Length: 97
Image (tube, rainbow, N blue to C red; front, side, top):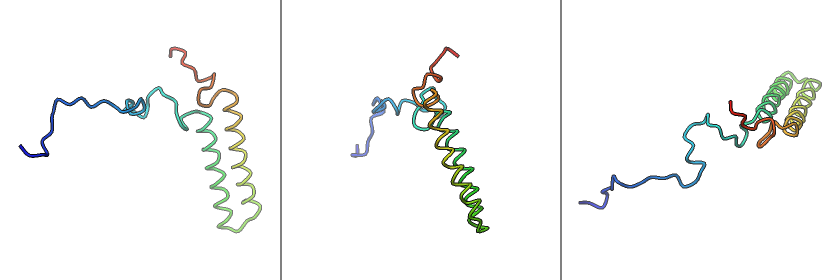
């Protein structure tokens, strides 16, 4: 027997609770997995796209519009979080469905 022999009867338990969830579509709501976070990021991506396109065509007006859309995305995310759609929010509580 060499030193590389392994014991097949060893229990492999997860080191913490986060490792016990194997699926990305589990019920646990964590970092960025909320309606508030998704809405915020999607609006900000649209704003970044507008600003990027405006930079290419050298339009200061549209560049500033894109920055405004990014700021609006942050505001919408904050408002949705305060309304209960963020992590631990009242609108996301498990109601048996």
